Structure formats: C-alpha cells, structure tokens
Image (cartoon, rainbow, N blue to C red; front, side):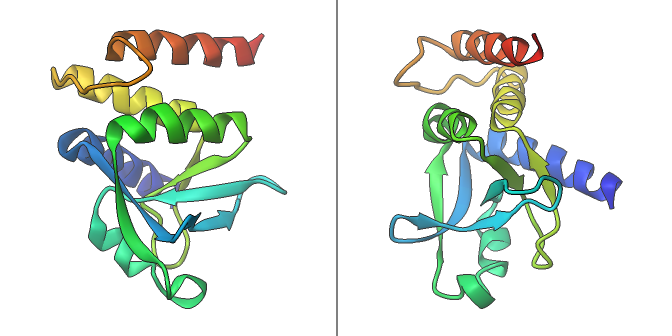
Length: 147
C-alpha cells in the first residue's frame, strides 16, 4: 500500500505540473475533507490530479459534491499556504476506498514548484515574483519547522 501511495503521489505531482490545475470536490464553499488515517484529530482536504479521480469519489457523504478545478497558482499560493497555517494535510489522488497519501501542504507545494521548474514552466503568481521566490519561502518555512 505504501509503495502504491508513493507512486500515486508522484503521478499527482507530475500531472498537476503538466495540466497546471488540481481537482477537488466541492458543494458551494464546502470542500471534501476526511479525518486523517495517520494522525488523530487532523483533517485532510482531498485533491486529485484529474477530474475523473475526483468524480469517482463523489459518493456516499460526498454524493452532492461536484468536481471543481483550481489553477495551480491558486492551489500553491492560497490553498497550500492556508492549509499549512491551519494545520491541515493534503490528501493526494485518494481512491474511492479513501486510501491515499497524506502530505504536509508545504511539501506538496514544494514538490509541485520543483516539478514545474524541472519542466521549465513558469506560472503567473499573485503573491510572489517567481517560482524560485515561492520555493525559497517554502524551504525557509519547512526548515523553520525543524528547529
């Protein structure tokens, strides 16, 4: 299971960098969340690398939720940073069994930024001059956690 979650995570990062968007399930302003399988009292907001993955999970309690895409810049600048500040995790490409990787939002952001840079892609950011500046800020925040 661990290896599959890791493979799905890599696919998520690559596909998000490729399409420059992420998908979630929303019902108005409410987004699909789940309790963490790894950490007590921690919420996970779920994101998928494609619409089909999100749509497949729109069952049971999320039956009335619809797949909604977010531009990668908004995901990186607003969602990942905000989720980090709120102590939430990102669930990437979870299956309909609600299995998948739970990741620190800044780690997800850093991996996406580095994949975009690796592909020599630039995206328009609102709060940062460049991907490199965003990358530096994320690394500083993550290093500050370790101290």
